[in-house]
Length: 115
Length: 114
Image (tube, rainbow over all chains, first blue to last red; front, top):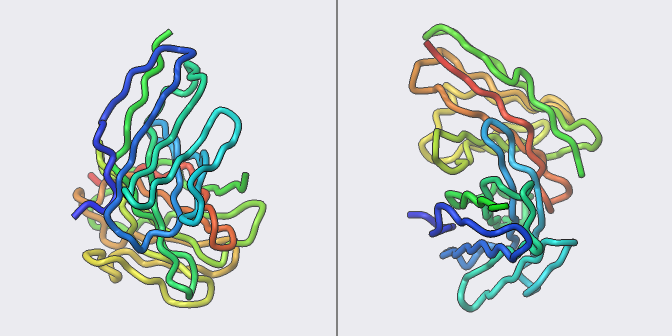
């Protein structure tokens, strides 16, 4: 049972436009959400995160929106640049009180920025 | 951001041998480190949680006797794949937790068992 779902395996966007990557989750115990960017044969690079008590977090060109009632979050990248082409993973975490838990990842969305 | 290193980046070994992978947090102390595995075109799957000075916690379906984890210090965790077989070939990635917030990942280790 997949608790974090990224339903779009790939997304193609023109350079300069907005990229919107979506993520849905089923576990209401998740309290922290993260987005990572990953290239093949490399580890994920942290982009931006959001706590479950917030609905928006912004960092430069990256904004993450969280809709708790819909169990949905999205990552907006604007403007999109060629260097943004990569696989983007949505991840979620529970906090057990005894320490941080490992992350549950979605399957990723391959973002392709067209020149 | 915080820097996490892994060594080796790539290893090829014969079936039946053991392989050790090191994960280090370079500029911060990590009470908790995590080990993940990624098969081709799949997502990252959590294997185990490693806490400094205590036994690792393994996810369901991960054999603790096959994947030995040692978290000897606040900056070093090791994963040893014992008696490796071809089905253990995968991309192994560690991460280190910064005070219960963001996890920073190492560059990964590609393991190929012949």
